[in-house]
Length: 596
Image (cartoon, rainbow, N blue to C red):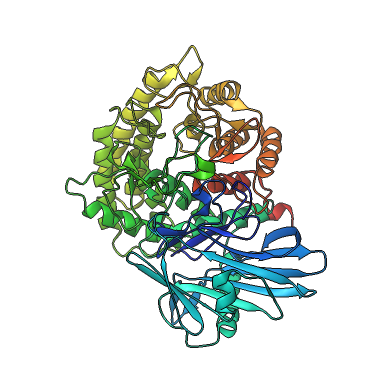
C-alpha cells in the first residue's frame, strides 16, 4: 500500500468475517473473529506515512501496473501485478460453501499468489495489529505457520512460503504458487496448496450457484449481481443481523468529525436490504433477520426497540474513541460503538412490520404459526401508534435536536396499513378494521401537518419548512400514489432544491455539525425511482446510468459522494447504496418477455 488511502476497495467475506483490499492488492481492513471484531488489519484508518502498519501486502518488485477484478459472479478477488518482464496473480477469498448440510464459513482469509509470467520477485509484508492499533501482536513460529497473539485474540497464518522471507520481509523469487491461510489458532492437517485450492474451488461453486438462484432483471445484470453479493457479505449469518457497512469512522465529508461506527444492525437500513434481496428471490436473509429481531425484542424489558443493535443483539453500544488510530487520511476520531442506540427513532416499528409482511404472502416460505407471528407484529403496531407524531431523532439520527419527523410518521402509518392487509389475508376481520382505522387517522394527520403549501411539497417535519429526501419514498411505501399531484410536486421540489448534478443531498439545512457538503448516495437512487414512478422514465434511465458510473472499478459504493470532486466518502460498502442499485435496476429494466 502506498500513498493516502481511498475507497476504491474490493470486499471479500463469508458472512462471518470480511476484508477490504485496496487497489494495490493489500488487505487494509479486516476484523476478527467476526464482522465487528478487532481490526487486525487497520491500515485504512492509519495516518499517511504509516499506511503499511496494519496491512497484509503482497507486492511485485518493479511493478508497472496493477489491475483487479472479481471472478465472475463471486466474492473472489483477483489482483494482477505486472512488471516489465514478470507478472503475478493474487487470488483472495474467504471460504464459504455447503458442507455436511451446513454452511461452512470459518474466520479465515486465504491468499494464493502464483507466477503468470517471467521470474517474478515478490515481497510479503504481514503486519497485523491488535486492540484497535494500540498493540503489536506477539509472534511465535512453528514449522509452517506463524502465530499472532494480541490480548485475547490469537490467530495463525499457515503457508508454504519461506517463513524467514515473510517475517524479515525479504524479496524472493516466486517459482511456484504459494498459499497463505489466515485463520483460527489451529494446525492445518494438509498441505496449504491443496487446502487452498480445494477451498477456492468449493467457494467458487457456492457463489455461482447462489447467483443462479437470483431473479435478476434483463438489464443492469452485472450491477445487480455485484450489489446482491455485497449485501450478502454485510450479513452476519450466525444471528441474522444485517450490518449497515463493514467499516467505522470513514468521514461523511473531509475534516468534519462526521465519523461513525456502522458495524451494527440498524432496523431501518435492514428493512431496505431485506426488501431488495426479497425482490431478487433471496428470502433466507429475511427469515434470519426476523429471528434476529424477535430475539432482540424478547430481551427488551418494556418491549420497545432501539434503532440499532450489535450483531449479537447487544443493546449497549457505548461509543468510545480509539486513539491509536488517527483515522482515514488522518481525519479522526475513530469511533468504536455508536451512541445512537440511545436515540428514539420511531420509524423502526413500521420498518420491522414491512420487513415481515412478505412472509404472509409468499408460498415458498413456511410459517408454522402465522397467528402467533401476527400477534407479535401487532405489539409493534401498538408501539407505532403510541409513538406516532412524537418528536424523535428522525431517520438521519440528529444528535442535538428532536422533532415530529414526517418519515417516522409515514413508517408508523405503513406498519398499521400492512397489519390491516395481513389481518384481512389471514381472516381476522376485527383486527383488520382496527388497523385500518389507525392507519386512516395517521394518514389524515400527516397530510394536514406535513404538507407545506408554500413549497408545494411534503416536508421533513410536521409544520416544517425544509425538504427531506425521504419524501421520495412515499409512493413506494404506498402512502400516496405516484399519480397524486402532491407526490409529483414533491418530487419536483426535491429535484429543484436538493439535487446537485446527478446527485442528491438528503437535506440542505444545518444540522448538529453544520450544513452538509457531501451528497447521500442512496437519495439519488430514490430520486431515480420517483422520476420513473411519475412517468419521467427516460430522465430516470439517464440519471441511473450516471449513478452507475459513480461506482468504484469493482462496482461498489460508499455512503456519500462529494458533488464537486466526485470522490467517495462515508463508510464502505454502504448497504443503503447497494440497495439503491438493485431497486432502481428492477424498476427500470425491461421485462424478460419483452426480450425473449
